[in-house]
Image (cartoon, rainbow, N blue to C red; front, side, top):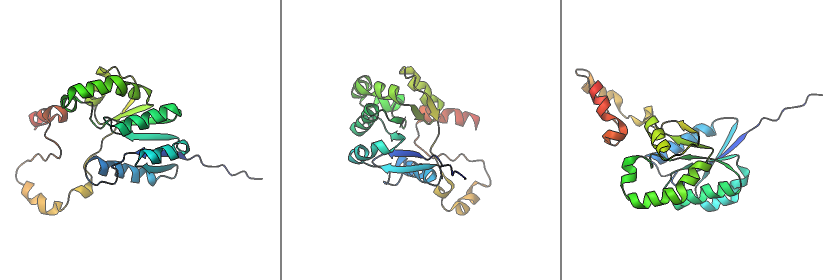
Length: 193
């Protein structure tokens, strides 16, 4: 008699209340959601509120939490800790020096009261760059870190056939993003150009 093996499916909840809002991080997180949703061995669910998280938390194997300085993030992380649920935190650049410089005292208080604990209890932390990983290490965060980026996708560049003739004669540097020289490394890029 043949015994059919049941395929193991990883059940992941993506916690980001603004996931359907359009541009920026929501667009990238929605794209990640859609890519994961195409996989046969992953069942991914959008979790857009704390009420939804509380009611569905036990059915997930892992929760991926996006953001850092927010009551929702604190509550979602603490909930995962209380019910012993694996969770990953994507800090979205919120712990970089420039981001910390705005409202610095409140953010340092938050990090010392909640943030460091939340990050230490996470199973993994997602960052975009090595620079961001090094900044986390300065905060004495020893949780395993993995790097993955969000970015520009081919469908983001509209009418590229109309734009290309302008770039045929001279070398041009085309940059998409905030002009944050220290965070983005534009000074190094310009030197190489």
